[in-house]
Length: 517
Image 1 (tube, rainbow, N blue to C red):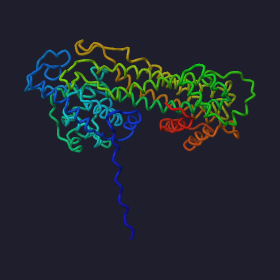
Image 2: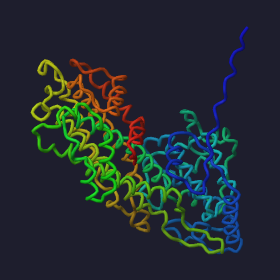
Image 3: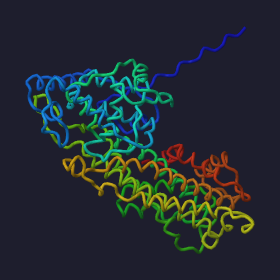
Image 4: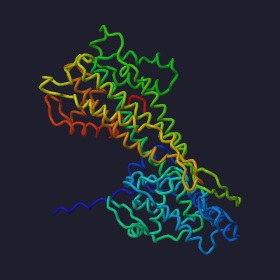
C-alpha cells in the first residue's frame, strides 16, 4: 500500500534587504510575493525619529503635521488630546480615490517602497507602524487602492490614504484574488487596527511610492516589448531580404551613442548565420527603408532613455519623500520631497520610447504586407484576393500606434493647482506612470503582429533558414500559432503571439546577444 504524497508547503517569499533596493529586487517584487528584512540599524533609525517626534509633542512645539492642520489649514493649532484623531481624520478624508484597483504586483511594490522610506528614520513614525506594513506584505494582504485621484504632489495622497486606511481597519484588502473587509485582512496578518501617533498619518500619506511603483511596472513591461521588438525587427530584415550592413560596428562607433552601439551589436548577432541573408548578398538593392536600416539609431535612443529612466526610478525607490522631515538633532524641516517631478519626467520619457518602438514596428509590418516593397505574396497569404491575410492585422497595428501617439503627450507639463492654491504646482506623475501600462499593452500587440507577419514572410523563403537564434523564435511561435495558409479567425493568433512578447522570453534571447535594457 503506497502512502499518499505529503503536500509540499510553498517556499516562503524571499526576504528583501531595505538598505538599497536594486532594479532586480524591484522587478522581483512586481512579479512575486516578498518579505522585508528589517535590520537592527533600520529599527534604531525608526526609534530615533519617533523619539524626536515624542519630545516635540511633549514640549508643545508647533510643528506642521504633528499638531497643525494640513495644506491651507497649516495655521490651525490642534490640541494635544486630539492629535491621534487628527491623524486618523487625515487618512480617512484623503481616501478619496476612484477608478479600477491597482494590481497586486503594484500594490506589493508600493508597500515595499513605503517601508523602505520609513525605515530611513526621517519620518518620525513608530516601529510598530512600520512593522504593521511589513506584516501586510509578508502575509500577502494587499490594500485595495483605486488607481485614480493623485496629482503627484503632495505625494500620492489619495492612493496612499487607501493603503493606510487598512491599518485602521477601514476599507478593503485583496487576499489571493478575493476582496475582503480590511478588518479581516488585518486578522490574517496577525494585526489589530492601529491608533496612529503624531505625524504618522501624514508620513504614511506623503511620498511618491504609488507613482514610482507604477512607473517601475511600466518600465518592466516596456523592457519586454523592447526586447521582443529587436527580435521581430531582425526577423523582418530577413523576411524582407534586407541587409545587415547597416549594423556594421564601425558605423555606430562613430555616432558614440551607447544604446545605438549595443542595439547594432544585438542585431548583428541575431542575424548572424542566416542562409536567407547569404542568398542575396550580391543583390542590386542599394539601401533599405529606414524602418529596417535605422533600427540601431531609433531603438538605441529608446534603450538609452530606458536606462536613464531606470536609474532615476531606482534612486526614487530608495529616497525619502516625506514632509516634514525629522532629523536626529531634533530639527524638523518642511520641504517638498513629495513632489514627483523626477518620476513624471521619467514616465513621460518612457511613453516616448514605447510609442516609437511600436511606430517603427508598424512601418515594418506595412512593408511586409506590401508586395511592391516585399516581393512576397500580397498581405502574406497565398491566393490573395480570395484571402485577405494580414490586411486588417496591419490596420490594427496602425490603430494601436495612433492611440499610443495620443497617450505619449507629456503629462508633466499639465500642472493644475490644488488645496486652495497652497499646492499650486503638481507633477501629474501618477497618471503619467499609470498610462504606461496601456501603452505597453498596445505596443506588445503591435510587436505580436510583426512577429506573426515576419515569421510568415520568412516561411515563404523556405527551404532557406534564418539564423539559429531567429529559428528558435520561429519554433516558439509555431508551437502556439500555425502558419497562416488561408483566412481564419485572426484574433487568437495575435493574442497567442502577444503572450510570447510579454513573457520575457525575448529578454533571455537578448542576454545571449549581450544587450539588455
